[in-house]
Length: 563
Image (cartoon, rainbow, N blue to C red; front, side, top):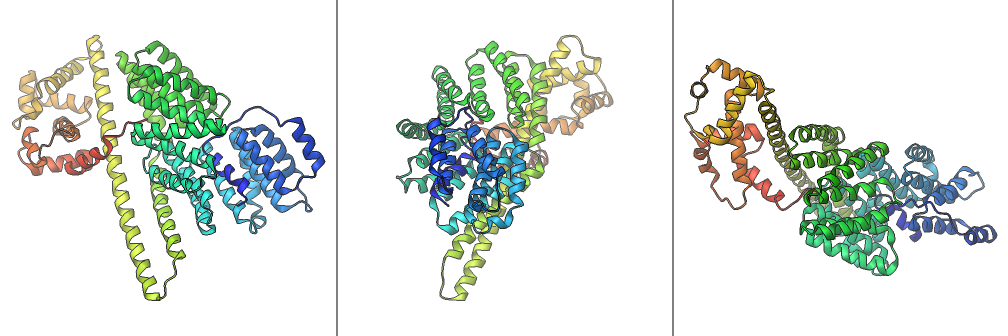
C-alpha cells in the first residue's frame, strides 16, 4: 500500500477528529494551478486525516467521486470514494457512509488490480460496523482480511495498524485478550523508529489495554511515553485517550485532584471530536465524582451525560452511564432508585451484548488465530511432503486444542460474572423490600418474609445441617405450608433452593478470598452440608462450575478492576 495511506486505516477506529476547518486558500490555489495527479490527491486527503479536517475531506473527496467518468484514473476514483466513506463515518453520517460503501462494493472488479485498496475498504467497513451497529464479529472478519493481506505482502507497518484496530475491538468489549495484539504491534513499531506516529499510537493502544487488565502502573508508563512523542511531534489528536488513561491511573491511587485535572484536559481535546471520545472520558469522570463524595455534581453530570447518550444514539455507553447512576444512588442510600437504574442498565447491556453475537465473536477469534497460523505455515518451504503433512496435522490439532481451551475459559468467566450479577441483583431486591417493609407498606406475607430474611442473614440458620421446613416454621410461629408459599412467592425458589442460595453465596465468598486457603473438600461442613458430594453437586447446579474451577477463574479475574 502507498505509504501515505497508512494512517487512514489506523485512524478508522481510534482517533477520529471532526474539527470544522477548511484548507488554506494557498492550498486551494496551488491545487488548481499544479494539475494534481492521484498521488498528490492521496497526500492531500491524508493530510486532512492527520489534522482531523473531515469536513474538508468530505467535500474534496466527495466531489471527485461524484464526478467520476470513464477517463478518470481508476485508482483515484476508488481512493476518493474510500476517503469519502471515512469522512462520513467520522462525521456520524452513517446513512451517507453506507451509500458510499454500497457503491464501492458494487465496483468489485475495479478493486481487483488494487489489493491494497481492498484491504483499506475492509478497514473502513470495520469502522462502520463498530461505530454504527456494534457488529464486532463482522468487523473482526474485515480486519482479519486486511491483516492477512499485509502479512502476505510483507507490509509490517500496516500489519501493525491492523493489530491496533483489533486491539481496540477488545477494548470496546473490555476484554484483556487485546493485550496480546497490542503487544505484537508494539514490537513491530519498535523496529521502525523512522515512524514516530506509529510508536506513539502503539503506546496509546497498549496503555488502554493495560487499563482494562487493571495494570494501572503499566498503563500510566505507556501513556507518558505516548505523550512524550506526541508533545515532540505535535500529535494532538491522541491526547484525549492519553489523558483518559492518566485519569484512571490517578484514580487507582485515590488522587482525585490529579485525576480531575487529567480528565478535564481530555475533555478539552475531545470537544471537537465525535461523541465516543466524550463518553470514554465521562465514565471515569463520573466515577471520580462519586468516589470523592461530590454526589450533587455527580448526579448532575451523569444525568446530562445520559441525555447526551440518548440524543446522539450512543447506545454502547448507555448501560454504563445507567450503571453509574445506580452506583451513585446506592452510595447515597437511595435503594429504590439504585435498583431501578440497575435494572435499566442490565436491560440496556443485554440489548447490545446478546449471547448470539458473543458466541459469533468468540468463534471468529478462533478463526483469526487459525488464519494467522496458516499464514505462517504457508510461508515455510519444506523439502519433504511428509514433513508438511505432519506439521499441518499438528497445527490443526493445536488450533483445535486452543479453540476448546479458549471457549471453556470464556464460558467459565461468563458463568462467574453472571452468578455475581445475580447475587448483586438479589441483594438490591432485598434492600428494596426491606425499606418497603420498614415504611409500613408491606403485607403480612412480606413481614413474615422479612423475619425469615433476618434469621438467614443475621443468625445464619442455613448453616445448620439440621435445618428443615418444619423447624423454620416452628421458629417463625407459623406452619410449613404458609412459610413454603411465602418463600416461593418472594424468593421465587423452593425451600431448599432458598437455603442453597445462601450457602452457595457463602461458598463463593470463601473461594473469592485470596487469603483463604481452605481446602475445598472441607468446606461442606462449614456450609451445613452432610457430605462433600452434596456440596459439589449443588454448587455446580447453582453456579455452572465446580468450586475449584470457580476459584481458579476468580484468581485470574481478581487483579482486574472493571472500567
